[in-house]
Amino acid sequence: EHTYVIPDRIPEGLYSLEVLAASSGVVYRQLEENAVRVGSLDESFTIVHLTDPHLDLLSKPENMLLFERLLNEIRAESPDLMLITGDLSSSALAYTTDWEFIKKKTIEYCDFPVFIVPGNHDTQRSGRINGMELWEEVFGPCYYSFEWGSWHFLGLNTADSEYGFVSGVVSEEQMEWITEELKRIGSEKIILFGHHNFYDDRWIFFEETEQRRELLDLFTRSNVALALFGHRHSDAIDYSLNTLSLTTKRAVETDGTLAYRRIVVEEGLIIELVEVEPKGSSIF
Image 1 (cartoon, rainbow, N blue to C red):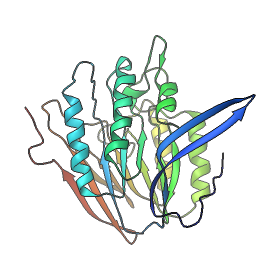
Image 2 (cartoon, helix red, strand yellow):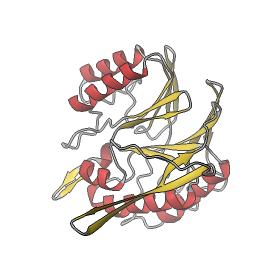
Image 3 (tube, helix red, strand yellow):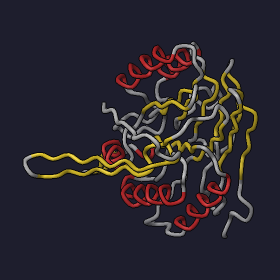
């Protein structure tokens, strides 16, 4: 864990972070673009939720144009942040092409922070390809937390298995991390985002029902106001006690239709939920 000091009088905005280190006469450089946001965070903010693009650019190069069009529509919304909940690709052979394209285009189009977690199609193993290891090289940790004003965000990896399960799995290590994070957060407000919806009791998306119940028990005892998921390729809005649970349809459908969801939070209350299909989004 590292702490960085931001110089005084830096204008508000989103900045890249460059780290330089020297050892034995060799200089190492790491650049993380759009990695640091400078400025105060308002208690009123807008989230865009995008999920399951399944780009597969090697076999569907037309999805490049569709994804760029989608990001352009989202940029016009001027959200404060965007959450992407996995299944960027459909198979391990497409990882490098799809992920590098998504990373490049989100940096190019999005002048706001973008946070991504993997889905079950993103953590597969095939030959020398290890999905989770490659994910960390391209995007960073598979699960993590961050603060936005008084809100705490938890990004979960619900595909935390090297065996390629379609259903949700969370490792023991991640369960311990979740438990410690919830202790640290206490009674403060939480927004979750992940791929598999463990709140949904109509469609059971977890490999082990006992683990699903354990997650539900942990989060039910915490102040989770909003939980965002993908995987189903359809829209759903559900309430579980004090938690609003949302599933959003595929970002890029097979017929070329585009979709995302906009969530507006004002003074601690979620006041607007909009499923957005950009006008003329289908090119077929």
